[in-house]
Amino acid sequence: MSGFRLALWSAAVLAVATIGCARARADQTLLRDAEIESEIKTMAAPIWRAAGLEPGDVSIYMIDDRELNSFVAGGQSIFLNTGLILKAKNANQLMGVIAHETGHIAGGHILRTKEAMKNASIEAIIATMVGAAAGAFGHSGAAILPGMGVGQQAFNRFSISQEATADHAAMNYLDRVCQSARGLLDFFQILQADERLQGQQDDPWARTHPLTEERINYLRDHVDRDRCSNAPELAGDEALMQRIQAKLHAFLDDPGITLRRYPESDQSEVARYARAIAYYRIPKLDKAVPLIDALIHDYPNNPYYRELKGQMLFENGRVREAVAPYEQAVRLAPNQALLRMSLAQVYIETNDPALNKKAIAELNNAAQAEGRDSTVWRFLAVAYGRDNNLGMAALSLAEKALADGQKTEAVQQAKRARQNLTRNTASYFRAVEIGHEAEDLDKQ
Image (cartoon, rainbow, N blue to C red; front, side, top):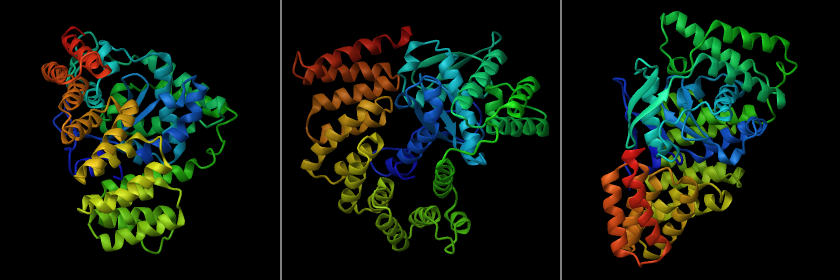
């Protein structure tokens, strides 16, 4: 995707980050996309405010998995499977699930058996929580699982009472902003039907969020009585949901399927966007670039069309040409750290020393928001290395290793950083801190 690690960051400097799973199945992939994450946050912001949360403090992450699942971990972070997003029939259903997960955040239901999980890399969190969803439970009811890089993690299985509490909280949040709870009820009924069809709990969401008839009846009773049950979706949410699903389909489905789903006869903005993505993935840039150029012309303030054009050019070896659209995207959305990271990668790959220095500046800016995504540290290590700044390159590798829970590597790189950095500087003291934090990993 445009901005997705799956599509862009695997193209040059980085490999796709795969997340281990306790079940015998394909590895799971973390997907990052500035546009989709931003649009989901826009829809969910009223719910988060109703819960007393600051929307800017809540993170949304996607996992490339067609099963229905979502979970909360690592503080105020909500993880959504692409299958759940694509299965939702409307924004109301997705917001119902997010309201429920918000209930877990506000209620403090997530047990962190190790404080390190708060600051663990996103990949480590997914590795642990996906394992929990697989149902590897001990006799005590606690999931004892190998996390990626943070050692063995233990999470208490969500109790029925906690789930009911999260349901109740979700109803309150939705009532406060007068959004219908019907979407959450519909989602529960979909899961219940799947359970009955399969004769067992096959959906990961049902395994980590045990369904009961009482819970569904409670939601149904609330929907029957609540004044907001028939309230329309908030203005703009339907269009955002259509855009999110179209973009996911365009990047994750076979391009031929996308072109059939969005034929040339459909000249809507969303259909044109989906076709541009499909042609780029074939690849047929002779069709993709004119389509995205037309969208840029018609919607000049949309940063993500410029981002997609930059990605098209970059992944097809036209690195220098990709610089301008990425710079324009960052100018239009300066607070999107993922866009800055993508721009930095393009700068690095130009092999221009001046642009490499710009890459370092962009990455240091992005690290303030994306420091838990070890990708930013790997990019910084490359950029500092090309700038012949061995101390900062080692410090960046130490940050990456620490985020990934790699104790030995973090200690070694922190030591190397101290040997190459000027003493009594902020960077030197940070290298010292990393060494201490890494030594503590086994104690957490």
